[in-house]
Amino acid sequence: MTKETVISFQNINKWYGDFQALKNINLTITRGEKLVICGPSGSGKSTLIRCINGLEQFSEGQLEVAGHSLNAQHLKRIRGQVGMVFQHFNLFPHMTVRENLTLAPRRTRKMNKQDADQLAMEYLERVHIAHQADKYPAQLSGGQQQRVAIARSLCMKPDILLFDEPTSALDPEMIREVLDVMTELAEEGMTMICVTHEMGFARKVADRVVFMDEGEIVEVAPPAQLFDAPKHPRTQLFLEQILSY
Image 1 (spheres, rainbow, N blue to C red):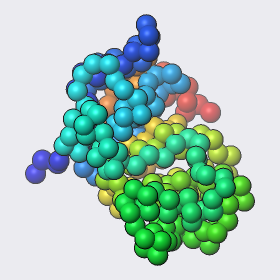
Image 2: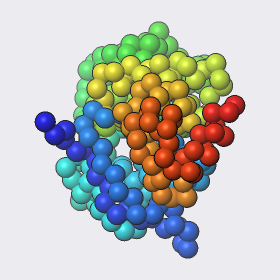
Image 3: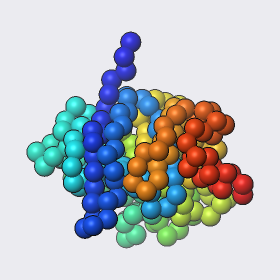
């Protein structure tokens, strides 16, 4: 049985002035797939996933998300189906954790306060931080704030969840708690696209790993193949460097 395609990049190019950030990207992602994108800084990883929900506009090509071409007509609908967790948590500092989570459901989905509160607590439980619901972001550790950010995205019940280097702003001891939550989501069948340098997470969770360099997709393979027997010399060099630490 063929799996349903939920994201399709077709000959996507992106320029910033004279600089080409994405070069002829062709990639399909199926429902429930866990895709990890890795590569050196400046390789186009974040630009690629930010195109999926329209945070970046591509210059050429066609991008389809959840059965809709990504354009101004469908952008609002697509954003309702795609959640995103950023490198920096982007929580409202003047709101409690609970208020951060209930804001979008109440404004966008027109939920009443009681239902929104119940939804927020459900997802705070899911990321193991419900006991912090009435604290403010500044009272939490970085790892806790990132788990709140994940719960906030889940409150919109997305079909697809994007992670843009979600652990890169965290101290080393806080990384594990965030990766554990992401692993749980992956095991529940969420479609996930994650930009990360956490190769252990990629090996454990990903169905496929995409290696990018200089705006191009250089190699795509299951984690065991890409990490243990990479075919492209550029992939080999990158892995030698990153795994030698």
